[in-house]
Image 1: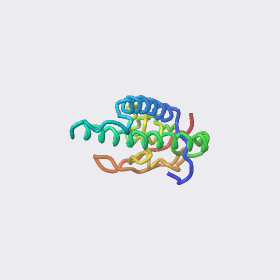
Image 2: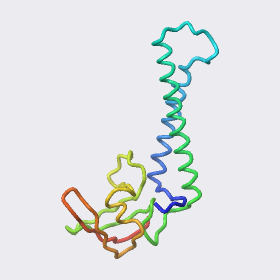
Image 3: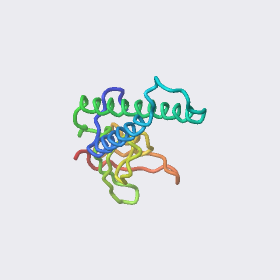
Image 4: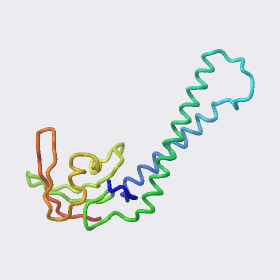
Length: 155
């Protein structure tokens, strides 16, 4: 990553927005189960432990919600993915050693169950970052080193 605001692909944005909606729904469900905190302390230790666990869960959910909202704001500030070279959010067509070609998106959301998504910190994704059409990149696979040629960058 470049250290500045990074763009995000449409697929990546959609995945983050879906996750944000799910987290907000989960947070609401957890929040309604918490007591309002200033009342009766007659519950047993198990009830109190359960309450503490839900409070911890709420804190975790709030942190992830804030993280996603920040990432979406950063993507808005960064603008569209670049087309002059590979960056986060780019759509890239690559040709592998065996002659096959694939079009992938460079993303940051590993949870996306999308076969065309390559994370920026994966071996192929990190090798592609900064390169343009015609460049050959080398990356590591479980079977050893491999190369791929960047055919095109863009939508």
